[in-house]
Image (cartoon, rainbow, N blue to C red; front, side, top):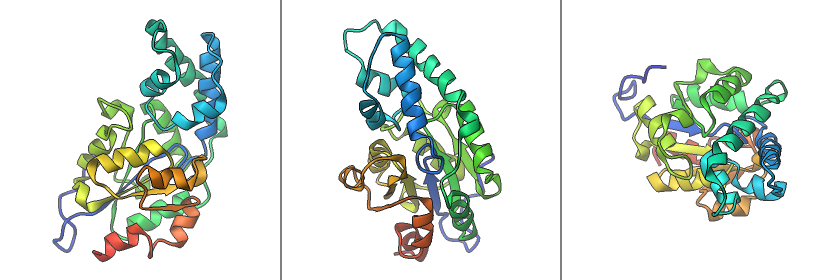
Length: 236
């Protein structure tokens, strides 16, 4: 999608909202967990699922490096990531949105915000998840791991999303479900809203920098006016 013209209709600065996708809008965090678990086992690594889930939300390269021994044969890392991709793809037909996800995107769009997806997913996975979301009418841009040099918790993907919608970091909000989402937003000074539907506790999200935490898209939608999104729209 082409970035919108700069500036809002009333001549003010354009405001935007960025969304993570896996675990935030799509119920896929545990599908990623079991896919990584299977990919590691194919190479002889028995990594507990709880340990894997903690790192879901990072880019695949960082996740692998965080979970495997430093002295390993790193030439196998690309095979592990490819295996994860194949195993995750086998679950594509089972992907579902969280309750309220499409409505939340629609309401943010209707409120005049530029809406972008800022995901660590591979481009092909993001295309599938966009189809599941069925919300292209409410999206101004969508960026994936292919648009960033460094993956989360580095902020590169968020920078790419901001550039795609022509919004400054000071005029944006980010919504995500992982500690790494909060850290990426914090690196740019973007207020981050956490959602616990991806399986990360509210206390962990707040400790990582979330300004507020909701159960999921429906909970955030029901509290939109009083949330950081509402305050952004009100200019507070």
